[in-house]
Every structure is written in structure tokens, then in C-alpha cells.
Length: 84
Image (cartoon, rainbow, N blue to C red; front, side):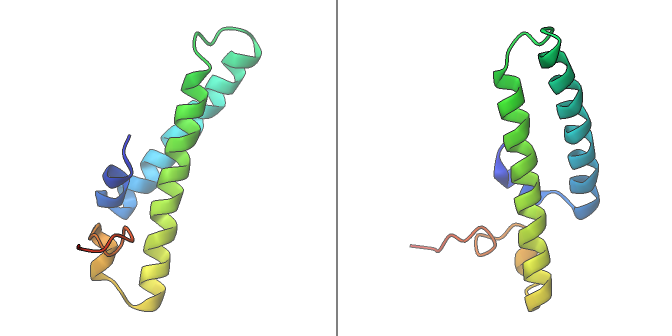
């Protein structure tokens, strides 16, 4: 999943997705430990998706704390990119 998908989702969606991903990651870890997981790459991918979601949450909190509420909705300014 791309970071932009997390950045564009609402706060509630992000919390729900994060919970689902963490639960899925936990199940995959148990499968990996018992030798039932077919591809260990799935662990890496879900771990990265969790990190992307947490990063999006963190950016929103920082923008809200500084008063930049409009940029929290996924503007390029929120992504740290400038127009060339």
C-alpha cells in the first residue's frame, strides 16, 4: 500500500486499518514461527505498511499541533514535497 493512500484516509479509517494490520501481523508472526507462513516477505510488507500508517498519524498530529489543519488532509505540503 502506498503512503498516499494512508495520507488521504480519514483519522478513523487510519485507526481501524492500523488495528487490522497489527492483528494480521501478529497472526503472521505465529504462522512464521510454526513454519506455516508461505512467504516471509509478507511479514516485511505488513511491517512497512504499519510504519507508513504510523507516519501518517504522526504527521497529522504535528500539523494539528502547529495549526496547519488544511495540510493534514494529504496536501503536498504535508508530504514534505515542494512544487518545482
